Image (cartoon, rainbow, N blue to C red; front, side, top):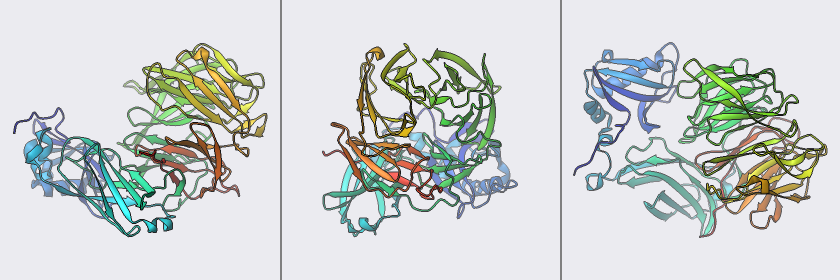
Length: 549
């Protein structure tokens, strides 16, 4: 068998004095062990805490034992205070290190074919808390995609274990599990993408009922109605408390990891909390002046950026949206302003980022919903709603086009109805609903059809689409319908004919909070307040309904 080595040999590479190993450490684990590969690094669980160098010392001892070298031969070359570290090993070649760590196959590249053997691979299954009805399940199906295999076997309720056997390859795959009673699908879930050549040692699949909300297991120890949330691609759900504390729900294993605190954070309703294209987190404040702090989950360090530009003054209440390429954040209006500016998310080597004007508005657009939609290589920016009584409901800064009914409409929420194909000539279709209209909660909706020439946009008003007013909806979607949750209620809106159905829900959220979709396809509903205006102490999860085959 012949094959070319890949461009990157995994986490181990040659160094002038030996080799270097990129690791990702998880301190305070039940025991110290090598877990597997994660995000291009060797993941290592350490029983030691990250205090006074204890975790670094435990890492050196564990690796020295596995590599059969003295601990003095190991040096933490980079990342001594973070979770992502580079360990330099003196006097040991990369090839020998790979063999001792069980990573030798990574250097062989593709085309392993007949040279491989089947490997057992345990999978942790996470079930919702309210799972009594899942006990009637009598079969479980496993799908290792793309096109690897699909198998089904009988089960008795939720008492089952999942273990795969496969021939390792370098294809990126996902594992989907389907729990059913006969042909009725009860719950399903999908893993993050992984490579069977180097599978994660702690892969988990979260199961949830399709098309409804399920209760995520466990209660929030310190519920915070004003927490902020965002999806960091490749990492998971990142939460920021109103006090500036960080927590990451890892989308590979659904463990929760705590991060560094941002001191003196902006108030929860000030600015934005977003993830950029590199998986870094940004907390942007605008109430006093435009300022930004960046958090790198790999190093667990916050850094404050210096914002430069012609006008970095206060923009309280500015509408914000991250750009389609996740390399900038747009700020619309704020403090009575009628301009549109963009804040770069690419700092220079001195931590400086630029704020630059990019357009103008037709008014302050206070309380508007700001959207950025990708269409081919283009980006469509639009604002929906606003507190101004004389403003049309929809405004496109590029071209200055305004459409729709005129009047005060704030906190409206929007979601795509089209199939999401990223084509330059595609017509985008949005459903926008709820919020406050004329100062009162509303169940009214707008349907937007946005052709490539945005000056020809069609806006259709749907009065009382929802059977009751919904001042603060959170939206969800699948191939069959879109869903709105709020006021402890749940509406299903058919994608094709916009027929609406009000059904029961387990979610007690009335307002506040966030709905965040992870890379696995599951959407989390976190934070907010309940009917008694208390902080909700549960999270809910939504798995899309599956279209009939």
